[in-house]
Length: 430
Image (cartoon, rainbow, N blue to C red; front, side, top):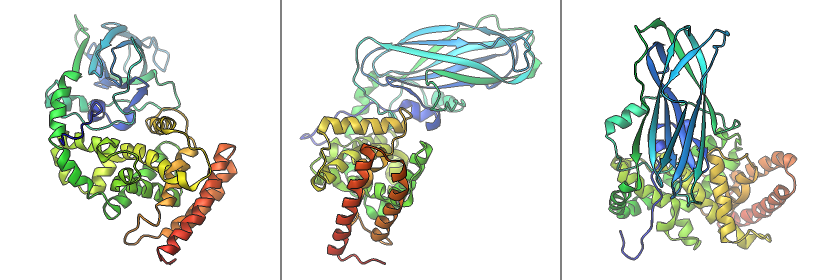
């Protein structure tokens, strides 16, 4: 790494290496994924609740996992489930990621059946307020783990549950099946196991691998331009916002993609927001290259959409505020307030908090309008983007109140200036 500039990377997203993004459950300082394996078992055959736990902070976490076992099946017949223990206490070291296995067995008079419910309640307490060391939306994979690749592959075969975001995140219902067959006898002994997957003991080796990739990351960063990433970013933001119940109009998706593309194409440095090495997306890129050497051969658009999009959105929010500030007569807050807003937005993308129309426009769409004439390429239609934004705004304003109405006033002013920018750049309307 360039000795003139050092950065401390966030901890890797080990949970994301194993479970699908839809299975990630976030409890602020703790993330988890929960599943049952195998999902179907015979009478007297052990199966287990699997809890993948990932600390988000640099302080110890005391975690309690409680199992609420069914007494009856959906038809009202009695259910008897043996459990090694129904309440498990454990302590995660700072940043630790581990997997808890709690064995169970269905015994008579339980009858074969499908979709028997089992509730898992997870609570935690931190000794001290900790600093967040992982991004809520995920991040780069780990390049060093405390277990073998075979163990990781076995964990990937578990079907972790998708828990709806509109339900309490600390109480999760799992379902299992009892197949119509019986083992000779119930297990004589069932032991709870916990296995550590990653701790900060791996961090120094992670750092060495990361530092070795910084120059390669700079070379790749120079290839993330309008021509190589824009279309992939449009598709990525459309899917991302739709998945979180805030679908985008075409003009909104393109404007946000322009803001993100500008940020990736050295926009944060040009706007004096932060050096390249301090951006969240560049640090994530370094970690990705360290953990997945094959990522260096990926097409730029695929690389961004697969690994860097959420991190780039965070940086685009900070860059967007800097871009629109000279063009609007509105107090956009100080640096810390903007960081807090960027954090809230990305936390929402991780399933925390309610959708807010402002997340689309302030400052992502607004910033996209400002750079519309700058971020241009083959087959681009910058005039059409502004027309589409006017059309989208007319529909959105029916639901706008208070501060959101002020955002649309800024939008219309910026669109007018954006049209002047296109004329000065001699970009003709098609």
